Image 1 (cartoon, rainbow over the protein chains, first blue to last red):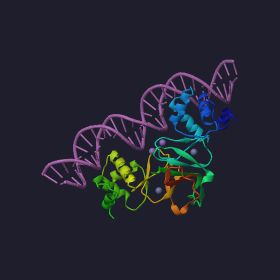
Image 2: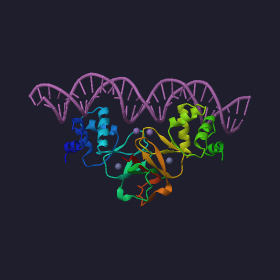
Image 3: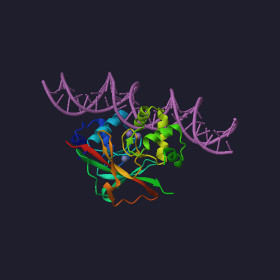
Image 4: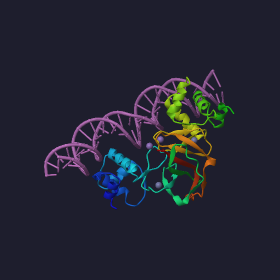
Length: 132
Length: 132
DNA sequence: TTTTTACTTTAAAACCGTTCTAAACTACTT
DNA sequence: AAGTAGTTTAGAACGGTTTTAAAGTAAAAA
Ligand SMILES: [Mn+2]
Ligand SMILES: [Mn+2]
Ligand SMILES: [Zn+2]
Ligand SMILES: [Zn+2]
């Protein structure tokens, strides 16, 4: 499935800007990135895009499930092209994230979900500190 | 141990402002809160404090381990008086956090920590969606 | 096709949580 | 009491993100 189809499939109009973003993000190589990272990459690919559009686009992609946003308390939002169920190591000094594949971890015994709610995703973050 | 001792123990001067904050936060009842929540509570207790001092204080308390900060991608930092090892349910719509005690969950099989790093804390977040 | 409609992009301003600045103040040491 | 190191503060600055509103574009209707 090409990127235009992926966008249409997701219910998004394949605008010029969304295609540029899709070409960068949906190429099979996974990455963690910020809005600014993405805009830099757009610029260095010879294109350009307003930061508002970058954010609009990321919000749409996220709501469609084409990308995810990682749960961290960093002041900058971090997105993830890896939409599979997986977890992260977080280097708190640098903010760097490293994937933990689902098979590498196992959650035995989960707590009871509060009345009236559904489990809508589990995220495990293992914070890392540099060893002396 | 009273609050003044707790502060001294932590290597912090027991200033008037820190005592006000300690009286609110270190009373044995755990809570999740933002800087603004805390300032509101300070105000409604008849005291007042500049927002810079609230943030300074929270940073010191956090660095001393008197409180923690929860890992979430909300745009406002959320602090936690519960410093025991525990986890959270996160209602993504409202931002509300609910504690998951350590005994309620069990992580079997942890991934190998990357070379040169140490495990500096694990946080599990179970995102909740309201059931239809 | 042409026209209409809804959606999208954009630069710029606004927003908002948080940090910085630098001067006044306070806790502790001598 | 005097000295000094640490703290508080109002206000400005900062940085990531969202809003605004006008111009542009994609899809639908005619
Ligand atoms: Mn934050
Ligand atoms: Mn954020
Ligand atoms: Zn990832
Ligand atoms: Zn908690």
